[in-house]
Amino acid sequence: MTHAFSGKYAIAGMAFLAGRFPGKTARTLEVEAVRLAIEDAGLRREDVDAAINTRIESGSGESRGWTDSYARILGLPAKTYFTVQRGGIMTHLAILAATQLLELGIATYVAVGYGATDWSDTRGAGERRQRHRERDGLWGRPHGDLAAASHHSFFASRHMHEFGTTSDQLGMVAVSHRRWACLNPRAQMYGRPLTLDDYRASPFFVEPYRKLDLCLQSDSGAAFVITTMERARSLRRPPIGVLGLGLGEAMRELWWEKRNYTNLAVATAKESAFGQAGLTLADVDVAELYDCFTTEVVLQVEDYGWCAKGEGGPFVASGAIAPGGSIPVNTGGGLLSGYYMADWTPFVEAVTQLRGDGGERQAKDAEVAIVSGHGGEILRPGMCSTHGTLLLGRDA
Image: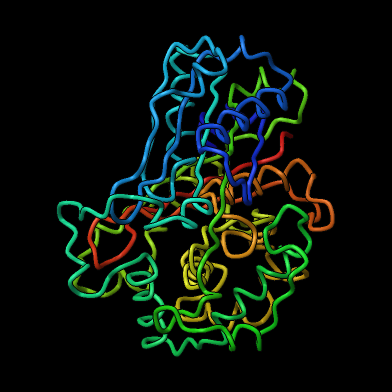
């Protein structure tokens, strides 16, 4: 039985820019993405009466921000504007907030935007040109936890220890994603095929992670417009319904149990999202999973139930997630080979697939897509704590 929330709201417009944009600011990229998303929906700027900015919370130092919002720059008659920020579940939280604005009658069309210059900034000094001032409560630096790969490598090493997962199996995640990227002209790694031998030759970054286990850096802007399904059906593009939304937190578990190093906080997020939608995993046609590192994909195919716990390595090595496999995973190349926009990357690819706009990489008869998000350090060195599950569907 579906929840009243399921299918009531829809993505009416979407746009993104991703890759390398030297000389552009994050604000400029966000503004352009929002403008294009409004145009994609067939709306005028005057129609958009609420605006949300999303921002990723970095793992160390202090994030840069800006004060002049895209809503003012575009002249949107927004009744409200605010920022949501939490690791890799920005779009999940933005949809949660936007649907409530619509439910309460505060807004009729809500724009959600994102902008970042991660690639350009890492060409300069420092990590995203942040001031390296340790946040209160973070105690990883004296133990060698200097970058995201440091504490994410705990996932990989623990999974290898408990289940015998191999480096080659992690490598097959990277190879599978690159195969998808080579079908996506907008991917940063388009036209750059990858073999398992290439992966093996990749240098170690933080053992057991090699360079090719790590996600890309990208400059990016992304946006969508959300409204009720009823309104969306009268607009330019086919509406993509929000079927279910769920959230999870690893801090519900005891940190010292080590279970948190071989499981993500999928359980409650999955239960909520699938329960609202009245669907099962068998109904999912395409999976866009947060893949900041290769092991996160292995964990998620286990935690969502495509295979049993501990069998994720052999599952991905079998070709199950690659083109032609049993479940298409990260069909645009993901964060590993497509472009880095945190959970915007899986979100925009899911909308693309459900619209049937995937071109050479289009999943056959894609009607339901899952979008996951992951991140938000609560404890370092430890793990990214939060997880989001979003189910999107083609309008019936």
